[in-house]
Image 1: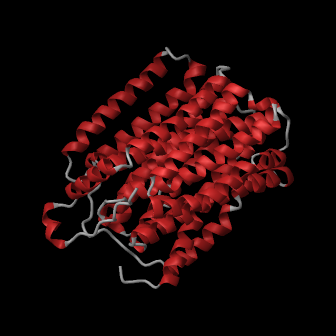
Image 2 (image 1 turned 45 degrees about the vertical axis):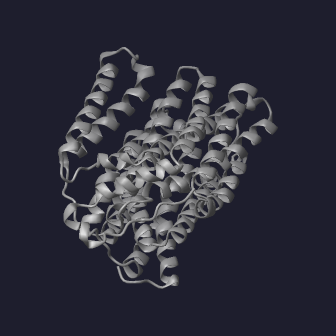
Length: 476
């Protein structure tokens, strides 16, 4: 890729952030609309879970394929295709005549979504090659998540109350079309110098793994945890995981290169992403149903109640990017783990629902924690890796986010359906504690050494003399 001016790099960052905005808005707005969908479609808790998890499972299953395909065929090309699918899927969701159709159209959205955020992150990684500049760009990227969390509940609540829940999907249409036009004109094409081959067996195993695990958790409380269907789902999960691990080790170009996980920061970022986004998925699912079903608030009022959480995320996400650039990932990860854990404990121990002061305190703490956690996940996942592998590395990090959020909704929804609300809050607290522990263990000097050794293994022997560029490891 030729050297780009600062203004052009900022424009590319803005275009990529537009894709993140519509995907993130879609999630936050959808949560606010769940009670309205429940009434219109006479949906159960598991039906509501599927409106979220059908999207998340599909996108998690395809992110790795999209990342490697973009590295091979061209990141701009795949990014544009993703915008088309996501925008078309949004239109179809707004026209869904029933819950089953809505879930199916959400899966079309997910096909497009799998081509957006990881590919956009790969474009950003290859555009911002300086470590500090890249960390600041990722901070801006994380700030967009904060914007979506701040705007999503309020915009979604207003749309649901005035126009109806179908209108929440309309907001994606103009943004998606504008991003498509700007991408065609301003983003240069880029590819990995060494294309990766398609791995159809690995792709099928990933789909079987995520699909069976999510189905088993969501439907377990209704069908019975010892029923043949649910037990069979978990057997498929275990077999798919074992098969994926053994098969991928033998491939020259695996869908998931297990050598990535020899890097302690990369493995840590993966686990932190699962834990942090599981907490987010469960937190939003629980609070949306509580505020509207138990407290009887309107969709707009429920959105306003969660505004303190969203504002904190908006403030601390870019701050996290600056902290990663100047101090490394450990400090924001430790602070994120502490605040997310404290937020869950307030609900589990102090009964936050009994007092608005406790409720808002928990929202503020969770917003701070989630705002801090996103930038170090992305930065750590790609730090020290060859830029030729940026698409795959970013896709693994994004996959971990989607897996975490889908598991959070599935597990917390299952606990809620079983009447174990306090247990659900302890699970969220445990996710925060995992962020704290893993973030502390995988960001020191030893961890950086493992990242450098893993990066050396990822450069093919025939390319060792080509000075394959690597993304510098962030200091801590």
